[in-house]
Length: 185
Ligand code: FE
Ligand code: ZN
Ligand code: FE
Image (cartoon, rainbow, N blue to C red; front, side, top):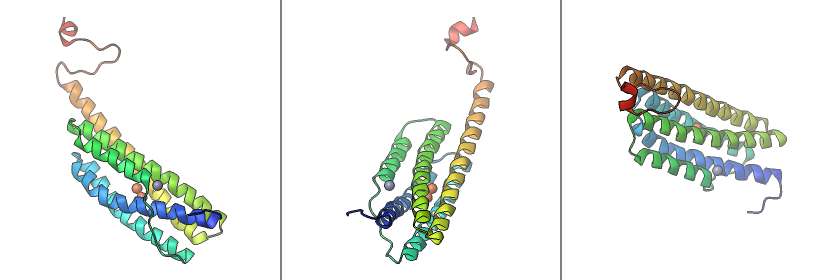
């Protein structure tokens, strides 16, 4: 499609995000299932519900333009979801897998934050206040989801740290790694 106006560009951006969100609605249940921590699973399940709302919000944005809601394959989200699947198939301890899952989920959030920020700016430029407001609402939700994931990661890692220091011979020390035998001497 030839993009000659800001309006056309805006519509193309919306089609991309619409596809991205719909892919995410399909991927998030798998990611939630793969989470070991109840906190992480709950956060991913909650974000699934939020994401369904974001799909509807995008449909309202299309409506505000008087054009049908259409999706155009989002290569970025496709790749990010693939990376999430890679993480899920890796052989890792529960907490570390969760931390890796959070890494995959935060990559998704950051992609969305970029996409919604761009779309919001285009809507503002076009004087479409309703669209700008709807896109800003979703942008805020994505930022919130990202912050929540950071919090969960910090808690998970903290708990893992405690376990490590409680177990004899597994104390995490700073500086050069030492062999267990020599450190006991
Ligand atoms: Fe989203
Ligand atoms: Zn995209
Ligand atoms: Fe999201």
